[in-house]
Image 1: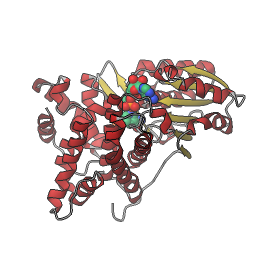
Image 2: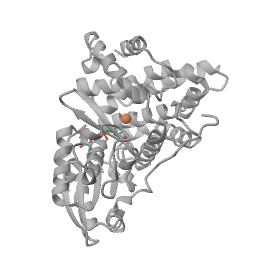
Image 3: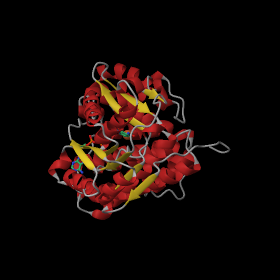
Image 4: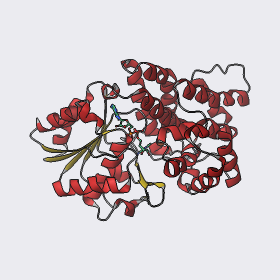
Length: 386
Ligand SMILES: NC(=O)c1ccc[n+]([C@@H]2O[C@H](COP(=O)([O-])OP(=O)(O)OC[C@H]3O[C@@H](n4cnc5c(N)ncnc54)[C@H](O)[C@@H]3O)[C@@H](O)[C@H]2O)c1
Ligand SMILES: [Fe+2]
């Protein structure tokens, strides 16, 4: 990190705080919208949030159409259906509201408003030619940070793989983070998404692309998750905990948007593609093992992770302090009720070979890892996590 030049990108506007969602109508107007296409997680229709967003937009004299056919961990066909509906409506502003699944669907839809072809044409890094219509993204889970990042992820059924579009053109104009929207998230989703945010923060903090700016956000995200995730899972109506987690997710998103993820996400993607394990659970299963492997790359940083998670490290050697970081993550995931071993979610020894092959293809993420990883080492880590 010392002496390197780092670029830092975030949405042009971040509006954060309880009640922030009420600004969505005024923002669609400010962005010059006259026809808003609103992509919302289907659960938000049940909670009434989707109707409130529609009313806020229409109160500004902006027309709006609601689309709620969002697939969890969206597949290519599902995002192409959303894009077709948005193109047909001829929207000039787009609003995405929901968890990472709804926000990634919205990101794909936006880019396809002004770029031709299908989402598969843009899998890879930097292939999107131009920005789509102006976009507002509003997370309702505290995990992915998708409202901030240049990434969006899609399941390709024919390949049984998740593929990413990585482009600064998919960072929205506006991100609105309203902790009140997360009060209805069930405990299991709160736990899995919270561990995803922790993986983001730890991986970004220890990435070879970490910078002074990303470190600020990553370390604060780790501290907030250590302080608030247990309470958010135990008592979902604790607003202080929900606010802490909403901020943590956003900060961790800022950190990965600029420093990237690495070993944990690389090893976890094949679990999602080949076995349909949800994103947060897959990352949580690999997090302590990835950290144990990476720790010797930077003992001081891993010790700082342990400290940010509340572990006493005074008087310990750097090696012992660094080792506390993986242990603290393991205890946190245990406390919030996430499976501890891959075998608990149906993975067996005979699956390991294909998981290693899938993981080694994630060159985009290995490039960020602070320690070189061979296929044999990836296999050994996966076997430990079995
Ligand atoms: N773009 C990125 O940078 C990025 C980063 C990490 C993960 N992801 C992707 O995001 C997806 C996962 O997103 P997620 O973990 O947020 O889960 P999700 O969006 O799939 O939502 C999980 C569940 O929570 C429900 N839900 C969402 N908000 C709710 C609310 N307020 N109240 C009640 N229920 C609610 C949803 O209906 C769903 O059943 C994956 O596809 C993953 O690959 C993207
Ligand atoms: Fe993630």
